Length: 291
Length: 164
Image 1 (cartoon, rainbow over the protein chains, first blue to last red):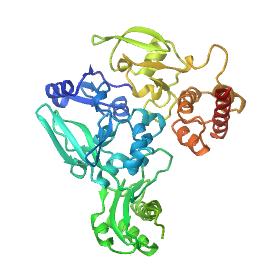
Image 2: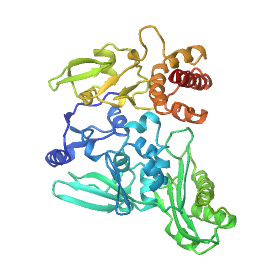
Image 3: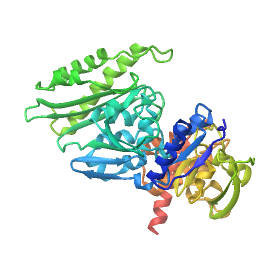
Image 4: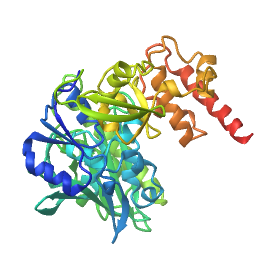
């Protein structure tokens, strides 16, 4: 359980980090919070020749509002997302989900971009990024590009990062003050990765008619899934309990989780049905227009 | 262990500066125990799950087994050895003793480091909040109930002291 040898680099700026990446290419691995990479190094599932420690790049630790979007620096720790008063108001779904990542000590170190690029199918940050339609800012020494989170996440632990590129930030749309939202997670032990998770935001008009809906599912496919067809089919209807039950059933029917000796596919479908209904009910209660 | 790639590193642990020659791959947990002989930090799973090796980095709890010692240059590390002032136990240590919040003691140092920091941030936690934070530290002896009571009691004592 000891890592293989590596050469240690500690850049003092993003530009310096990108230069090191450009020089060593695939031989280099970026180390942020180390809460996912650390175990992989210890178990020698990862054996990079060069480890590039990003923890001095405090320029990438920020939460700020820029023209209606919340920009979050790559090195921002989960604990900051979970405890930021600003975020609890402007993007409460992200804040609430971040508060459930791993454990207290893990959240002090783990970073928002670290979780995103690790791309565990059951992780919170990728699910919230896909559900809210976040954008990922990717930089290399040649320039930067912006990728929608849904495109950035390609498959299990596979993301759209080319050699010598790094994520420097994420942009989340601000949630509206009237918008309801909910994040629901099921795992066998508190703090474990989700067996299934659901994120939702919704808006109701004065008579309880659904005017906006986002529904995202985590832990049930290679990447988080946004349920756009279900969302579109539900708009314009009164969001009563019958519709909530129907949408939950549709979500369960829409997924094809893999069979797993410990977690049968049918169990994951049942979890999604239950969690979706729960998320929608909680989201409705947060709109302040309870049916 | 020193290899050809060893780096000269200066780290501050419990307010003392140590100048070391370290292979970058060496875990902070191992350096604390083997080089600095600070064996109060225990090593359980070595992949961040059990919480036994929890220490403070710049006052915030972290897994020493998921940290390379070489990363700590420029940061302050605090271990269980520096928590109490001599033989006088902190309210948290005293409460764990009184409430029988430990048996074998393997997990205890990690739990103390976690909650010494947490109670600074949240001096009046609910039982649910205590259990949420405690979920990051595995204990195979107590069933957690007595640890929850101890944290709750320690928080009350600390609040009381704060008022004095």
